[in-house]
Length: 616
Image (cartoon, rainbow, N blue to C red; front, side, top):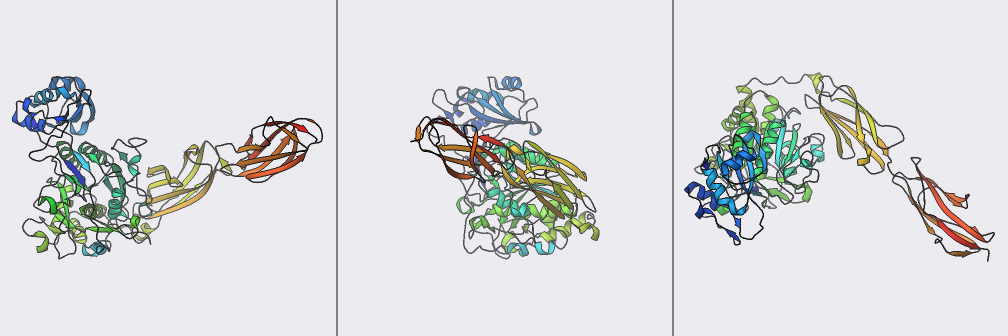
């Protein structure tokens, strides 16, 4: 077994953050070091990185195994020589997360150290968000022309067939990404609905900002222009709303992105931990021809030149930063022989209105977007060929390629396209007829809808629609690749509030053109509400009944009837408060109720008021 010391912290790159681990890790107060009881020096190094609680009844300690052929609980227990709980597995990587009783940690590490069936054992690493330096002088994104994007866009602005995975804090669907954020996954363990659809919930906004730099629509009169205007975005959340997560989640996220169609993976995160699970995940991506891009980090001013992972892995494009072409890297940007390219450093952040966000987090997406452009122009190259095209076309400015800086220099998007086109024959440029947008239509049921309803969707295009999405309001309810020309879409209206909602359809063709259509759908799943607030029940009233009622409904009220002893005595149109005075013509009991009808035709009754009436 290869036993690895991996205690550490990743930081969103920004990537200035606390780094745990390295030589001489400190065992915190309230925890007992276990290294002394482990025989092997290598195993002792792992044991030293594990904090074992002293308190009785403490939570189990987690360990990470990788390179395991048989991850069944029985086999893991046999190898460990103790009872352990298998918490999670990543089958593609032979990786297993186990929970161990604190008293058994030393024995388990020793047992696994002696087992040939286990590749690596490590303590879980951590990933955390970090500061993103701000400066009012970094107000404009002049890096786009500096990096050759304006010339690159003359050749291609991307393709909706290309998917850029943002493994980060999630991605919100913004107008600059509308119709191009596909269903992702959440590996933070903090979501409401779990894996599947929370990848698009970015409370931290870091992932959204990086995704827009890579793929925001250009020439649309809104926001910013990203690198690859028509590439789609796959959100994979591995960092929570505080920007924190662990290396296990990063490994899971990379594997998920590869298995769900990503062509390039952007990792604006990293740290000092050379984690075996992340390392295997990167190799898994390479084996599937997926390019991995990672930020180098922003802690040079604190830590000096140092390897930061996953950017330092050989098959990962490690990206540092520069301030202007011809200038060197900013004081915070990591540098050294582990990193290949330098790219722009900041972006204008419209969410903060006037502020700018800077850091190598916002350098990596320029490179990921360039890979998207290359893949759009030449879809059949290998991951190694895409990397080589960027490396061999980089601008070797002395301020960036000198000793201890970057291996190849500054990113050149148009140079990379020229190189890749010369390496592999380019995809044919769409004919003029292929530049027309798809035609789409959508119809919703007339009147008010409840329960599950059917939308009718149709689409056509001269070269065929490649992707289509249906929204109710801002909620994605349906998405399909290569949809039929006409088809129904079932919608559960109980997911939405009563009232009128916009229904929109967006479709893309193979040339990256898009078309849309919308209609309105009225939803009513709830009865109207009527409250009779006067007169109070079981009271005695004299000479007249002062009847007061309040009505409301999400779809609006058609009308309300006031009934006394089974006779209609008044009514009104619309919702809100209404009152009427009815004379008492004889002594006796009066039963009062209001019946209200909403615009969908649903009827409900108010509470009853039963009073004793006296003529005087």
